Length: 199
Image (cartoon, rainbow, N blue to C red; front, side, top):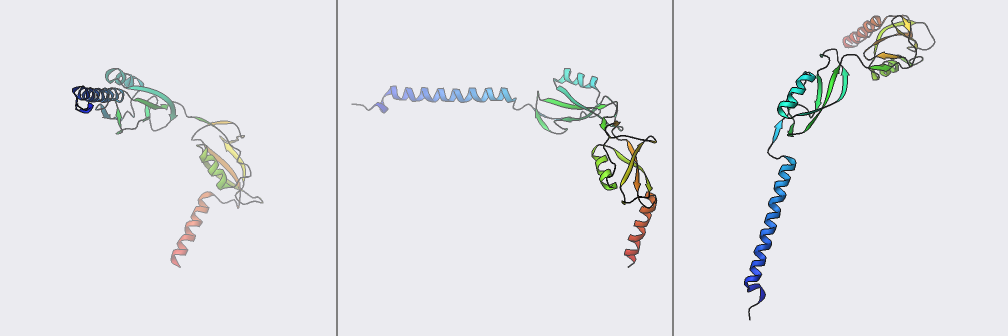
C-alpha cells in the first residue's frame, strides 16, 4: 500500500501550493512597484529663482506638483520667485512627489518691537537679532548703570514696545555710559590688543 506522500495527488497539491505562493509573490511585487513607482526615480532640479508661471509650465509638462507653503522677504531675490523648495535640489525622489515651495515676498515681514529699556547693550542686541532687527546708532549718556539701554529710537522718535516694524529694520539706542562713541570704544579695544601683543 502506497503512503500518501508518494501518491500523485500529494505532488499535485504541493505543486499547486507552490504555484499559488509564487503567484502571490509576483502580484505583491508588481503592486509594490506600481505603488512606489520603482525605477522612476529622478534627481530634483534646482527650481530656485523660477516664477510661479514657470512652475505652472513644469507642472503641466512634467507632472510635477507644487504647493506654496510660505513667503519670505529677501532683498537679494526677485519677488514672486522660488526662494527654496523641499525636496531640495539634487535629492533623489520618486516621480509624482509633491514639492513644497517657499516664495520670495514683495514686502518684508513685520515683527513686534521688543522692550529694550533697562536691558544691557548685549542683551538688547541679542533680543533685536532674535526678532530679525539690528542695532543702529548707539548714543551714550551718563547714568548709574554702565551700558543700560535708556531709550529705543526709530526714525528719530521713541518706538514703544509692541509696535510692528519691518524685519531688518535698524533700531537706534540711547545707552548709559561715558559718552564715547561706538567707534572710539572699538579703537580703544584694538589698542589694548596691540599693547598685549607687544608685551
